[in-house]
Length: 222
Ligand code: URA
Ligand code: SF4
Image 1 (spheres, protein in one colour):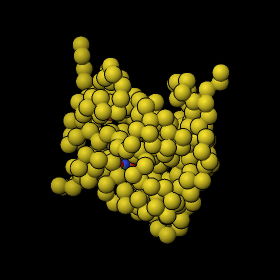
Image 2 (cartoon, protein in one colour):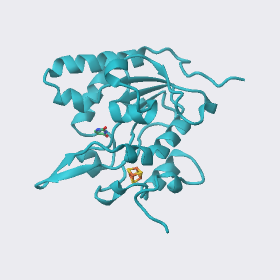
Image 3 (spheres, rainbow, N blue to C red):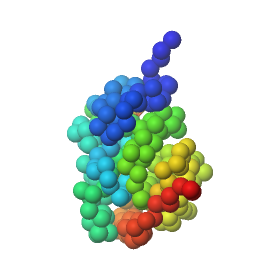
């Protein structure tokens, strides 16, 4: 029996793979239960030839309403750090590990809820397809959820942030592998008791990513 909401996104992938067909197909994804209460799928956004790909956790309240990633408060922190690190946001592909907003209601307020491991896994086919199509040189991994999706469950952002690591945990390294730089999530900057220190650390990691030389993508052997 076909059961929606627990089989993952794979069966919703389109036959023809380009960013436009992916985005259209993702709009109808029912690969986990999150589509039921969210407003819409928030797919990645940015030029297909982007050198940098930024991966967050999941859309927040404003992203869910507007349908675009990182357009709320966390996005403003991100925009500032990108600008200070000398990275043009218009040239960056921005996406999330999970494409629907996960929340609980507190009165009428929708409170962010961290996606479960099962939801991250369910949504992974979209992220893998985006990576395969954009083929970024540098992937900035924003927080623990994105790190779990891209670098595996044993990666620890707190210990391994700011160090470029090859993104070779994914299934098909046939197109070469990008370098990943993990950092904290911009929302964690906003929640930090010492916001200035948290932002400084975030910016320092972003500068590591910005300084990686052209040709950082490791091409496949042969
Ligand atoms: N937080 C995220 O991880 N992604 C967004 O798009 C917005 C907030
Ligand atoms: Fe599909 Fe991902 Fe949305 Fe779940 S969160 S329904 S897997 S797009």
